[in-house]
Length: 360
Image 1 (cartoon, rainbow, N blue to C red):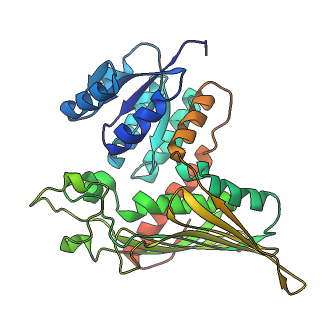
Image 2 (image 1 turned 90 degrees about the horizontal axis):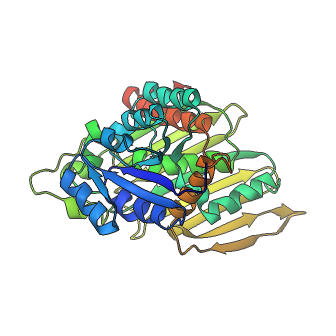
């Protein structure tokens, strides 16, 4: 690419776009955000107007028609990730797509195949990989301090955190699922990435809806779009899974939007290896505590690392993605890894529906 500014567009004008992607892109000196798209044109115009962006569209094809467009953030509801990402890639535009990759495995495969065929960058927004606490855990593993990791446990349990009734988050046609696809995907990716992505071979899962279907446990995120009488909730508010790896390691997962837990819930990931153990625990990510545990000659040799970050990892992720677009770096989130996460999520839902273990 030349020294000109990188032209970027944002598809979807919800909270993740207006509060994260737009300001993160605009914080980069060599980027110009040229347009915002939303099916509700008034919302696109509002976001564009507040940010000083020239164009607002209701149809993503109008954005893709802008000459010289280099990249887009796909921040639309999950049901449209594949359509919007594939169209952008076909138009010669690089794509940073919010998680989850897609609702259907076939669509995830098509997204990856299109990126490979067009030679454009497609990166799924797994922001936890850009958190300093998770990077520290990954470094422990890379340095061999844990030895062979054989047991992993990850969880994010909210006491009250359903993201808005009447929103697409609680509408299965648009979201594909609830807490598992909203926050569980981060925990799965976090654990797998730190452990070096061992190959999963089977998964057993269970999902529940015990609060949302009773109109309970509305959280702060999305509370502003609560609509009386529009309380559709046909997704999960708690999910659990057990994953077996080809190398014999296992991973357990628990996530919830709502559950009878302590006021601040839990947010953690733990790794146990033959030479040591490590964990992250946090009340308010990305501020976290990272601990390393080791027994030598029967004596404990432990250490604690306090990690604090004043900026959301989205800023780091978007700066990294821009480097990939420019050809200066390779995506930290690869297509092969993204497809593994997509298969795990699909397997959890399949197992929850059938009550049986699913082979991957």
